[in-house]
Amino acid sequence: MASGKRCFGLSTINSQLSTGSAPRALAFTADQLAWLEKMRDYISASGSVDREHFELSGQWGQVYRVFGDRVEELMEELSIALAA
Image 1 (cartoon, rainbow, N blue to C red):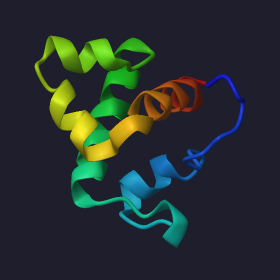
Image 2 (image 1 turned 90 degrees about the vertical axis):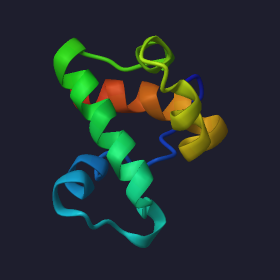
Image 3 (image 1 turned 45 degrees about the vertical axis):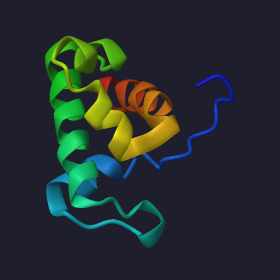
């Protein structure tokens, strides 16, 4: 992320994925949680996740529909936070 600001509060996303709960500002839909789990799995396997991971599997449209314009920013931040 160019601005250096975190907009998704990623320090709690992994916790939310494992417990299913998060502060109200970080509430994710069931669809978003399912994609976040897939992103976490990609990061665990390859050290990062990006658009190409989902384009290769034909899933980019679905991911984009669920997260919108900020999905690439989210994936970048997840990659940095979870690979550390």
